[in-house]
Image (cartoon, rainbow, N blue to C red; front, side, top):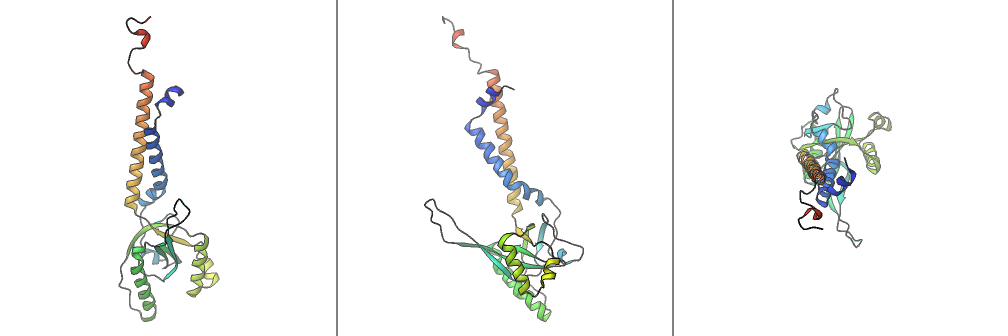
Length: 224
């Protein structure tokens, strides 16, 4: 392979395809793998033989919720340094499981249902009436870090858990909502862009290797 021909075969279009395709693959690869793992349901996590682990694929109706301990907001930072008003993007709820509790980060559109489920869960603990609210969520489990982990532990204490009980639960985990269909589409699109970029790069390289096929000026009739 001639480096000079390879360099000349690279153009803006090839670089754009490889850059955007590579970025999509980088952003979606981890969740793409998780999307094909066998899913565990929220109901199964209430059973003794089921344990939530980082990287778990979680899917199903949320059975119980114990209120939320943190909210999340997003904003846009403008080029002049100012920023737009904050917009709520979901809450972090405490979800009971056989091994203790874990957090659930939901979309803002799911907040109303999870607030209702939380009220019904606390009523169930007092009266025995099972919750009736159904809310389907799919996502992946990961470690809860930073200030959120602190808020999580504080809320466990508010719910009546002792420090020893909280420690026995291990590192706090959170199930974050993920649109796995969008993840798969993004991964496939990224792969297609990268392959197309490689194809065009190879075609350009072969063209440089073979030449344009046009006769050189010194080979034309009448040339000195």
